[in-house]
Image (tube, rainbow, N blue to C red; front, top):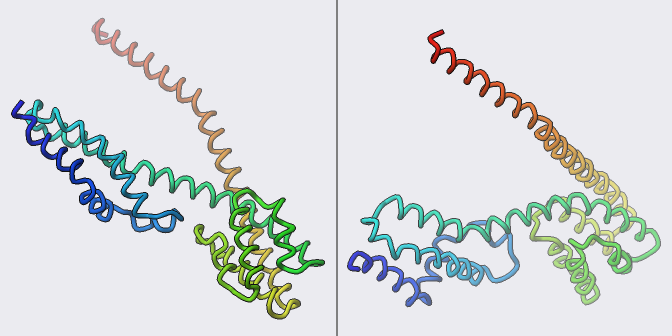
Length: 249
């Protein structure tokens, strides 16, 4: 019973003084790029992660029974780090998938917008493109339309469009769209065409990457039977060698 006092005190302090300890831990272990991945309150997100991860530290209670084994402590700490990082890793993976989708969908939407711009104003074209816009950009597009309607000469709404993905081609496209709306349309339209040609490279690159990924998956599937035959062959050879040694050649 006495062996559990130290781990018990540690856990008691972590949970009783959570209002002080949780924000401190959150600040110490917060990732540098977290602010680029979420729109919500970063501090609250980190505190929630810390509180969920702390539950794994309850496993420290029987630590004294194992005579304070370093291996047991390492096991608990690994669980703690995994629980702490799991949401962050999931978020990064989600953003990575969204960027991949955006590189595929944004050039297509941009071409639709180009067609609408031939007979409509910028704000009208953006509004008309909304129903057919990719789901990934619809919320940002709604905000963009609302903010432009309030102040058509403000560059900020254009720059905030899909800002969380930090894609230079998107930023460049929105700057040209702003120029098209406020300055010389003929010159801006020519640049808009050039920009569409550039973003089309995204589409080709993304298609090529997806095809390569699928091809690699099929290659590994095709290698599975070969790997199985190799293992079987080695097992047979090992069996033959063992019989030869047992029989004294």
